[in-house]
Amino acid sequence: MLCTRCRIRTAVTDDGLCTFCSGTRPPLPDGLIAPVPGPGGWGVGTWPRSPVGLARAVTALLGVVIAADLFAIVTGLRVRALWDRLATDEAVDVFGPDGASAERLYLLSGNVQNLANLVTAVVFIIWFHRTRRNAEVFDPSVQRMGPGWAVGGWFVPVANFWFPYRVASGVWEASAQTRPDGGWRTLPRTPLNLWWGAWIATVLAARVTGRLWERAEEPAEIVRAAGLVAASDAVDIVAAVLAVLYVRAVTGMQAERALHGRAPDGPAPAPVPGAHR
Image (cartoon, rainbow, N blue to C red; front, side, top):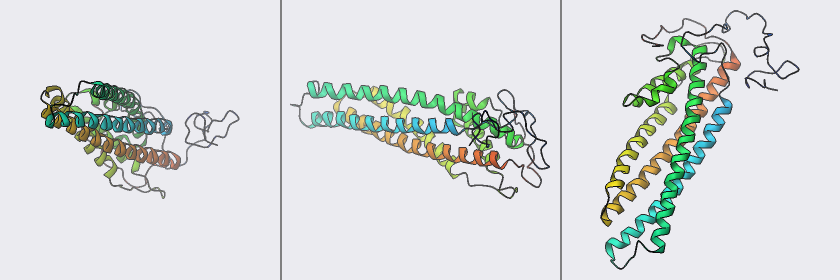
């Protein structure tokens, strides 16, 4: 049975806690990670905390985002079809019952998207910060930015296209570096890079298509804008799928690292200049 607190190590006490969470941890053999606080700033713990529960929540919410995007694509294409008919047949009444119904559903889909994205973003950032705190415990020397940037980096204009990636890069390196035999390893950052590239693409696409939709007045302009918005929603679905793969990859590596519990054998990499600022 897993510890009821950290959900990583095996429970050994009657109340379901492991030796670490219960405070009965025996002296560590040589080579194990020592329980000293990291120098990374606020939110850094002595021992890693399980990101598994948060990862499951993020994965479920990303599924809701995908469903909301599909809903928006369907309703958006319906609106587009009505205005496309108007562009070729003036007898079509887009303001009649069918048009009004399509418009209401399209507005509803937009509200559902906004709510799903907001809730998912909050839980994702909490998970992101949890993994960054764990990375500080695993290896603070490879962290390029302090744990606070795992939250604040998303809200800095322009820099939010780069700061979170730097945080994620350090998390990936610290989480993936230990092999089962205790040596160092390097795993390809493909899940990280694909997710980040897709996220940048969907943010830019949403901004451009949103402005086109707001400015569209003529039927032909509305048809084009609605099609581009649907394409942007499709890109968001791809980004959400890649985000699920990234979250699962990091969570799996951190769970393995915590269970393994050993610091990598051999010399550690040199500290990264400017880390923890």
